[in-house]
Length: 236
Image 1 (cartoon, rainbow, N blue to C red):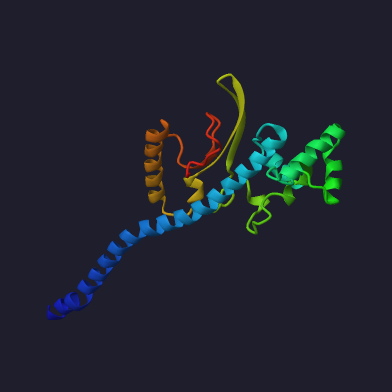
Image 2: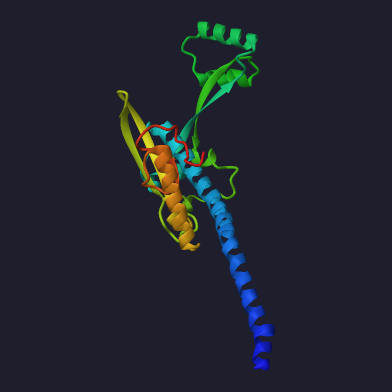
């Protein structure tokens, strides 16, 4: 009996206390780890949605509409060119402005390319010239982490696709091109504690119900196909 008491006092009870303390610490730390990992994954996903927005805006500049196809967007980046308007000379330079006006009076049909040749020779002029520049030489040049092949996929999801749509909607009698790209927390947070993710979905849907009047989405989204929002992200 004495031996049993000693075993309980010196072995079983301390182990039970240690186990209980561990469970308490884990119950506190698990949400902390979840939120830290969530924030890290969100940062990657938000950058991907911003890249989609950048490409969509460039595509619309060229074609007057957005696209719902990632293949089209990727082909636009690799194979297409975009018009870039550059201003040469300064509109604040009164001499350049006067020279330009005088030149146009003498030769009303003068082309920007001809003005460029004069500019290169030292003429003080102010004008704009339009160039065709490959999209891939214009966008993301300073981004070593940009990966075109990953554009359509939710990061950390093992292959889940980002949902993208594009429409032309009549707003106040005007046809307005709209696009939307979105990914769910269910895909983005795959592999993390499922109950904490379910809790997050519930709180996000409640927040969206109050803010947007709809509770059908929990995740990250850029743009909107229901109403113009200046292609804003729901994290902004």
